Image 1: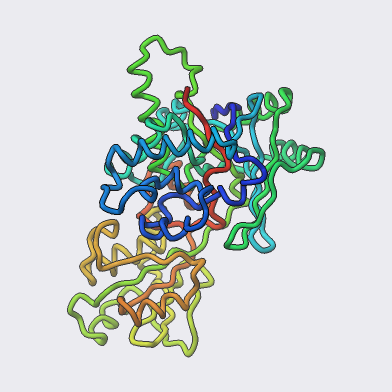
Image 2: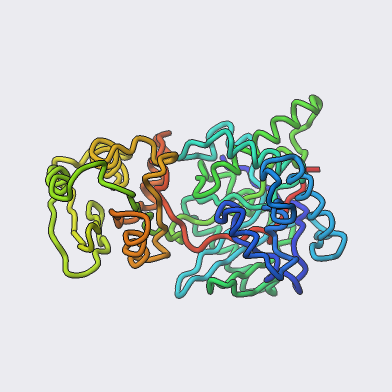
Length: 412
């Protein structure tokens, strides 16, 4: 059952919150991060991507970068840009994009829940990406960005959160550059926190929606500290990591589309003949945005096609039946020769937030072929996690994106 706890939050002063809040560190390249923070000394990227405050010649994974991150964090605390709450708290974090809102509970989750499988995952992690965040968490002595978790929605939890929102003042309210509204309430009432802990203790599983590398890294830092402190009690802060838990039925997964650099030496005619074995193909006079599972849009040589998966390609296996899996196993690998989509530079991925125009644009710049996907559902994600299986990389694109810098959890 899920263990959650309150913590002594370090967070931005109200005056600076809109300047501090930043998209997650891995959304940007180093050069992009340097541009984003121009004229903004408050941006959390000065902590999350501290190489931006060092010469470009410095290796972004050098010890100097992690020390700079720690120095920047300490400096921003000393200057009052960040403050620490007087009591242990949880927080309510609501994001609104257009007419849709999702409301989550910011708290700490137990590393033991990850180790025991209470917190379920659906992706593999890479050792190099883990090591980066391990060093960052360890040197900063803090979780600096919440892990995005979900759980099967519960009416009683929704009721407590709604009641708190209705009866308490907002801590933060601001609109980020991408038009997303961010609102935060501090939950510092002991009885309310106890009620939330009890309700979550009856939830069998939580699921990583986004942040597999940061979760694995936070857990490994905790395990390393246990090894260094053999008399640990389990109550130390390093036994927990910063998380925000959203009910599954409030989340919005967008399409995660694919663009490919070449046809692997095939002519257009031969390629279309090959994929006609997997899909029913129809030409379209307009862009094709898939409206159901088993439907894909394809853009090739300035022409849109509607692809329908043939019935014989449909599998009873949850992973194999994902549209991204059908594309990978029947087109990308055997026809286009793309074995590992995580490392092959002949393929790239475009989040649905960018729209189909972006796919056309890429096909006039550096790519020749694009696939518009129907979004993977949150129910598919949870079912695959429950079966202890793995989804193909780049299967989900969640919107809106959580902001880093709003909450910091110190490990000591």
